[in-house]
Image 1 (tube, rainbow, N blue to C red):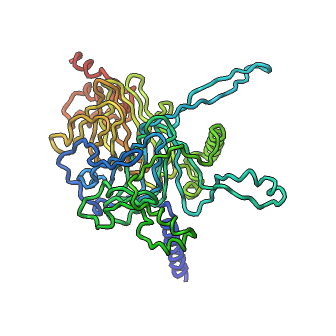
Image 2 (image 1 turned 120 degrees about the horizontal axis):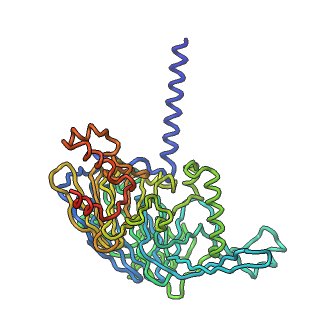
Image 3 (image 1 turned 135 degrees about the horizontal axis):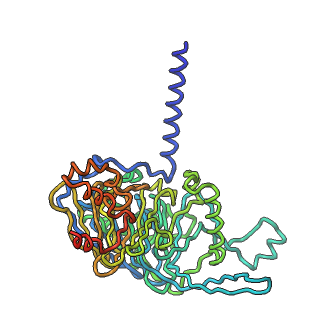
Length: 509
C-alpha cells in the first residue's frame, strides 16, 4: 500500500513538471536554451579572421550592411550580424525576425538640455542646465499588450464632459522608448519594431542575431519579415536559396489577395495596394520630410518614470524580479553600457569594461544573450582569458587593437589587428588577449549566453592564482619565486591591465 502511494506521488510530481515545462515553452518570449553543438555546424576552425561587412543594401534614408552568415566562423558561433545606418529624419520601417537579437547603438546624437533646481537655502535656488544626448526613438510592438500612449481630439473636450466615458482618440499605440549612444536594446524573436532618427547625425546600430536559439524554427539562415516598404533580397542569403517571389523583397502584405486584405483589415482596395508598396524603391529606411510626430511623454516625464521604475526594481531586490512578469508588457528592453560610471572593471591607467547580463536586464534570460562594452587606453591589455560558456562576437567601435586567439595548437588561430567596423568571433574555450595600439581602443562584444562567464589568466581573479604554488612549480619547472610572481604579479588589477609592466619585467631580468 505504501509503495503504491509513493508511486502515485512520483507520477503526480512528474506530470506537474511536464505541465510547467510546457507552459514555459509556450510563453511568447521563452527562447529556451541554445541548441547543442551537434545541432549546428561543427566548429572545425583552422584559422580566424577579422571581417568587414560583405554586402550593402541601399535605402532612401540609409543603408544596411551584412556580414556573411554562411562563413564558418559565424556558423560555428550560431550568429548573424548586420549594421544599419539611419540618416537624420530617417525611419526604419516596421519589421520582425525569426531570431532573438541584441542591438548596440554605436553612434547618434541629438542635443537637448535638462534643468535642475537645487534648493540651497529657504529662499535661494540654483538653476543647473546640463546637456543630454539622445539618438532617436523606437517602438517594440508586443502582441496582446495595451496601447498605453494615446491622444484625443481637443475639440471633443466639451462633449466628453457631457458624456463621460465616450472619448474620441486621435491616435493610440504601444510604448515608445528613447535611445542614445551606448544603449543595448533586446529584441525577442517574432516581435516587430520600428526606429526613427530624430537627431542631427546618422544613427549607426550593430545587431547580432542568435541563429541557434530554439526560438528559431526556420533553419540556420536568418530571415527578416517587413511590414512595409520593399528592398532587394536579404543581405545574409545566398542567391540560390531564393525563389522568384522572394527576390523582389516586398513586404508580407504583397502575397495576399487584395479582396481578402480589404475585407480583413476593413479598408479600401486603394489602401491595400499602398500597403503592398508595389513599384516603390525607397527600401526599408525611408525619409520623413517634415519630421515624425508621435504621441509620447515629455523628457522630464520620462526621467521621472525611469526613476520610479528603478526604485521599484531595487525595492524588489534587483535580480530577484519575476522573470515571467518582466517578459510581459511592462518589460524593460534596454540598458546603457556606454557610461564609464557603470563599469564592472576599472583601471585608471588601463581602461574599463561594462558587462550586461540577465541579472541586470532580466529579458536576456529568454533571449539567451548578453553583452560587454570595453574601453582600453593606449597599450593597455585585457587579461588573456577564455569564455567558459559562450561564444563572443567582438565589434570594434573605435581605434584598433592587436588580438591573439589560441586553442590547443602551437600557433594562434588569429594574430592580427581588429579595426573600427570589423567583427571577430572568439569561440567558446579559446583563449584571447587584447592590447590597444597607439590609440585608444573601444569595442562591444555580444555573448551567446545570458550569463556569460570568463576565466582570466592574469590579475587578481586569475585561474593561476587559484592553483597551489607547488603545482605551478612542478607543472612549469620554475622556481618558487617565479611561481609566486606568476600568481601575484598583477595582484592589484583585475581583467583590465595597465600598460608598462612588460618593460619593467624585462628590466628586472
